[in-house]
Image (tube, rainbow, N blue to C red):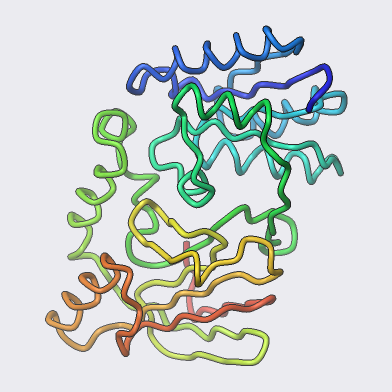
Length: 270
C-alpha cells in the first residue's frame, strides 16, 4: 500500500502505560519486515510534533502517530501548515484516545498491523478555530473542560480516563454559568450555559458519548452541544445523569449541527 518511508511520531508517556512501548516496538518491526524505512521522533514538549512534521514529513508516505489525541492534533495541524495530505495512521497509546474510540481503532498488535498494511484511506472533516488553528475533533468551554489539563499525568497513567471522572466530581462545586450568544448557520442560542462543545467525534473526554447516527465525520458539519445553567441542584444531578447515559432530550440540553458556529461571551473564557 505505502512504498518506502514512514515518519513515526511518538509521545514518550505512551511507553509508560500498560506495556504499550512493546506494542510500539512490534509496530516498528512490522514496518521493517514490509520494506519500510522509518524515522522515529519522540516529543518532549508542546509543539514538537508540529515541528517534526515541518522538518521530516515532506518525503513520508505515511505518518504513524503513537500517542493520544493531543499528539494527533499537533500532527494534523503540522500537515495543514505545510500543505501536505500525507495519510496518518493513528496507533492510540494515550490516556483517553477519543478519536481512536470514534474510529474503532485498537492498539492490539494483530488488528493494528492488519490496518496499517491493508487499511483504506478515509477523509475526515477538520474545523478552523479562531481563524488559524485546525480543530481535529473538539473545542469546549465551561464545566469539566480543564480536567485533562489539571489531572496529574501519573494518575491518568494508572487509571486511564477514569481519572477524569474522579477529578470531574471534585470540580462540581466550582461549576458556574457563562453568559453567551451562540450563532450557527440558521439558529441563535442565548443565555447562561455551564458547558458548550463543538465536536466531530462520538467520544469527548471519554465521558460524553454521541451515537454514530448523530455524527458523520465527513459531512462538512460539526456537532454543537450546549448545557444551560440548571435552576436547582436536582436539575444539575439529572443533567449529569442524562449526559453520562448519552441522553440529550433534557430541556436544558441543546444539540444541533452546523457548518459555521460563532460563540460570543460576556467575559473572557478558557
